[in-house]
Structures are given as C-alpha cells and as structure tokens.
Amino acid sequence: MMKRIKILDKEFELSLPAAKVQKRIREIAEEISNDLKDKDPLFIGILNGSFIFAADIFKKMSIDARITFLKLESYQGTESSGRVEQLIGLNVDIKGMNIVILEDIVDTGTTLQATINLLVGYEPASIRVVTLLFKPDSCKNDIHMDYIGFNIPDNFVVGYGLDYKGFGRGYEDIYSLVNEG
Image (cartoon, rainbow, N blue to C red):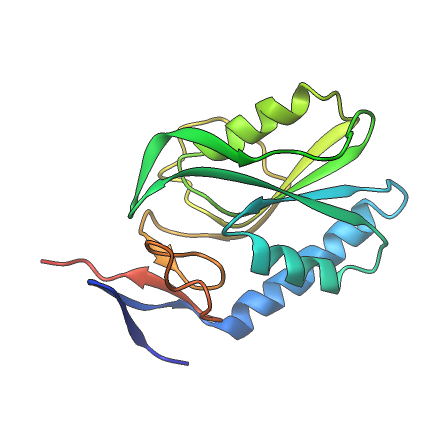
C-alpha cells in the first residue's frame, strides 16, 4: 500500500485502504443478499468506474442474480460537466424487474438522477441504488440511496475503478487529490 501516488500531473494521498474497502463491500453484499433473496434482481453497473466494484459485490453475494451495464459520462478531467451522455445503452427488457444500480461514486448526483430517470421509463418493479462512495456535500439532487459504502469529503478520488483522465483505475486502495497550493 502506497501512501502517495502521482497520476499524470496530479498528486494523490491514501484515503481508503483496500482492506477497509473490501470489508465494507462484504457487508453491503450481505445486506443486499438478505434484502433481495426472493426478488430475482437485475444489477446494472454504471461504466466505466463501477466495473471493479460491481465485480466484487457480485462475487460476494449469496444470491443468484444477473448483471448488465450502462455507460454514461459526465466528467471532464476532475470536474463534472453537468450533463450526462449515454454511450452504451440498456440491452435488457427491465419491465417489472427489481433493479439494483451499482455506482462507484455519487458526487453531484447528476449521473445517478439521469440513470434513474432513464430506467423509470422502462417500468421496473423497483429501483435500488448502491454506491461505494458518496459525497454528501457535493450532491445537488435529492436521491435515495439504499446502500452506501462510505461518505467522503468533496475531494477528487482515484483508485479501485475511479480514474483521472483514464488513469489510476487499477489501484486497490482509494486516493484523494492533494490540494495544490
């Protein structure tokens, strides 16, 4: 475990060690398994950031379930652009299904709100939200989240699937941007 990393032109310091992240993921997977054991859920991972989180949650659950992915984009560098683009769409009929959205991070909530709005139009039976990281001080939308891994400060983070300009996703730990100046 490295205390500090450099990605391109930015410095980051350790924020959440991998062991703490994995412990929390096991707890969330257990909660989801208990809550949805008879619901035949369909998990929808939001790409690109959630792919590692989605895989780890999925491996640790004790229920049988299916998974698919949506690719949405709202970030440019370290800032949210405020608009969401759908790059890869839903390829499954979700009418009447119990949907579980898997997000790596909820920042402003713009991407998550757009995702919920999109999915509601397909008439699922229910929609639950799981996020590994939540920035309550940044969230501009009133969104109910059913499972939250960690509340974190309003700071840019990388690692464990999260990136800076496409780099840094492969770290097992999560790192926060070091304030410059």
